[in-house]
Length: 317
Image (cartoon, rainbow, N blue to C red):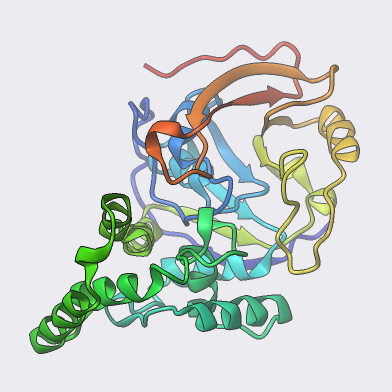
């Protein structure tokens, strides 16, 4: 079956020496369920290969890490949600002016979501959808109504185009009587979440020069897998949100695991659980993102599964 290739860049370069990621992972797009926190651990469990497919790439942490550390020579990123693929392409092609990106208000955030769902969006709309959403879920605005004006003033203090604008923003921030807020709210104000996320996107720009990257927008059940040496699936987890394709579709896990087990190509999948006939090859603990209190964040165990019962994990030295 023919692939729908959206973007491809090929540059001549000396292949990066295969090495352990040693606690590091490549930059990626902030995205719900993104594996950046454990990308290095997952990649260290995968085999070195020529052609790698990140079949449900999302923010791209696995695919980019495979490329940056030379575990794969050619990486294809695929995702069913086209705005996300367009965002990857836009960043790597330096189509975004990060220095002059506007503030995203609650109303602007809602407009961005509507545009993405209707297919009439800009790259900035996709950035706002994920960088200004809670847990990068692309659904709920990042800030409460109470904190939004404070966050706006902090954003302007940092991002004002001229020093006079930044000074005015600081004066306005003081006028908001932050002294009347309790300590916990002051700590929340100190966190400019969206700026950290935008910084990650800027870092991602640099990966466009690293080698062979291809982006596609296909249903995973319709891809020709025969051209890949290794495939990785980061499917929507059971009892969580499904694919964010604007159509509120439900992912069929029974269909996927049956399909996964029958793939002739070597394939891996991340999930909390799988079917009994699927082989688990590794597990990783990480903190859940859905709690503002760092000390009370829930520890969850993510598992890596393989469709080859004889596969042995070989950590790179």
